[in-house]
Structure formats: C-alpha cells, structure tokens
Length: 374
Ligand SMILES: Cc1ncc(COP(=O)(O)O)c(C=O)c1O
Image 1 (cartoon, rainbow, N blue to C red):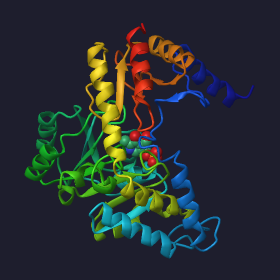
Image 2 (image 1 turned 180 degrees about the vertical axis):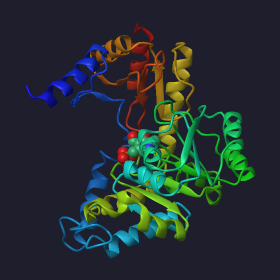
Image 3 (image 1 turned 90 degrees about the vertical axis):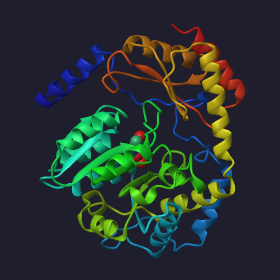
C-alpha cells in the first residue's frame, strides 16, 4: 500500500467507525421519497419527447466545444437565457452548468476584500464553498433568526451581503423573505437568494418565491436551479444586466468551463414550457404535502416544522436513522438517512421528499411504517 493509500484509508476507516461512510447506491423499483424530482418532470415521457422534437430544430451539435467566452456560445442558449429572464422577471439571466457552480461563482467573485457576507447557518455547501473562496469577511447567523442577523449586520463593514435560501434543503422550512427584504433595506445590504428548492414548485410559471411574493426587484442576486423540480440540469443567475456582465467577466466557474450543450439548454427550455401548460402540478404537489403533514400530526411523528415538499422525521443518532432507513427500504420505500455531521448531532433524520407522482396510498403506507419505527 502506498503512503497516499494509507492516508486515504485511515480517513475512510474513521468514517466507517462513525457510521457515516458514504456509498453510491442504485434504488430502482423502490417508491421514490428521496429524489428532487418534485413535479415528476425528470421522469415525464411527454417532456422527453418534446425535448427530442426541439433538438431536431437546432443545429446538430453534440457538445458546445468550448467555454461560452470562446467557441461555446450559441444563439439558442442566449434565447433560452432571455426566456429565463422573462420568467424570473429580471433584466437578464446567465446560465451556469449547475447550481453548485452558480452559487460558488457568485459568492467567490462579488463580495470583495473589506466587504462582509452574513449567511444563514443552514445554507448549502456550495454557498459555503463560494464564501471560502471569497476575500470578504464572513459569519453565519442563526437559522431564520432575523434578530440575530440584525446583530451581525450592526457589526459588519464594507458592502454587506446576506446569503439565504428560499426553501432550506435539509429542513424544508422557508426563509421569511419579506421581513428579510425590509431588514436588508435598513442596512443597505444586498440579498443573495438561492431558489434551488422553490424553482418550479411555486410561483407563476415556476418562477419561485421572490417572484411569487412580488419582491424580486428587491433581491440583488437570485439563483435558480434546474436539476430539481425542473427535472433537468443546470442553473441560472437572474438580476440586472450589470450583474450578468460582471459574472461573464469575473465568475470563474462560468469562464473556465465548457459550456452546456444544446441538449441541456433544450431540456431547460422545454421543461419551463411544459410546466407552463401543466401548472396544476404545483397544486397536486401541495395536496401531497397537506396529506403528509396532516397524517404526520395525527400519528404524532417527530416531524420537522415544514410545509413544503421537503419533510423529515427526526430520529437522533447515526445508527438509529440508518437502521430506520434500511427497514423502510426492505418495505419498498427509498428514503435516505441524513447523518451528522451533515446535520447537527441529535437532529439526524429521515429526509422525505414528496412528489406529484407519490400516490395517496403510498403516503398513507409510509406514515404507517414511520409510526412503528424505533
Ligand atoms: C440549496 C441548494 N443550492 C444549490 C444546490 C446545487 O445545485 P445543483 O445540484 O444544480 O448543483 C443544491 C443541491 O442540492 C441545493 O440544495
């Protein structure tokens, strides 16, 4: 064994001992209570056909062949960006290859030395990674706690940035966006809003939380991702034309990477068109959420305080939550355990994602199993 293998093995062994070793798994045949395909678009045959039809109308290319700033740009991707800007009611939009790249790019290049980033303690890893790359000062505030945020705003210097999510990926709860906008205004702070889990799920044409509340113009930087409810892949940043020009010049995950191929841009384009003509999917999802939440209350489950498609049942301890997820798997449900340190010790949980395609019977059966799980 080489020196390097020994070092890596030791780290893996430590994870194994803590019962937190990650492994790739395949789960075909199980009832999906795990994926981010909230509206069923990733599995929609009709959407698949529409994307194929759309591709026939585009120049026949297999790959973009370079970064957007070199050979990778196309009229089509620019058209898709214009359509996204219309949906998200922004002056402009810029596509990134993933939400990870978009968040990391924004956080790393916009707040500068002397500025301050204050972020909700539960923001996603890609926001944290972007912050680590930034030269700005940074600290977190207690989850959704605006009085803690205000304390931190008072001792911040330079241009101020507040990074939040509209729906939190592990807890499923929502950001108090209107109050946050009012607070940010008082301190002249800029909001960076990640709409990963609200894109598609809420708002007209799936435009997310800020647009659905009519406060999108008060949020300087919005990030929307397409790999979740939109059922495809990629992301965009929406905001002013100046913001987009700045990102084209300074966001390294945009500049130094091969552009998304037309296949992918077509999937984004068609997926929003599909949602527009099937907007009732949002109501269907809400009905599933209501059913899960009311049954969970009835059965006195230790659920998270969430009214969104991301639900959870807290079962403290990595061992306990892992065993519970295996038990549910043996009953035909695909539900993943969320272990510490991904979530704080003591709040380990089964993360349950609800979908339009989960039948009421599947939800009832799941609740019955959860009620007897130890
Ligand atoms: C809140 C949040 N932001 C960003 C991302 C990253 O998006 P993508 O999967 O498109 O890279 C995720 C993915 O899990 C997320 O949950």
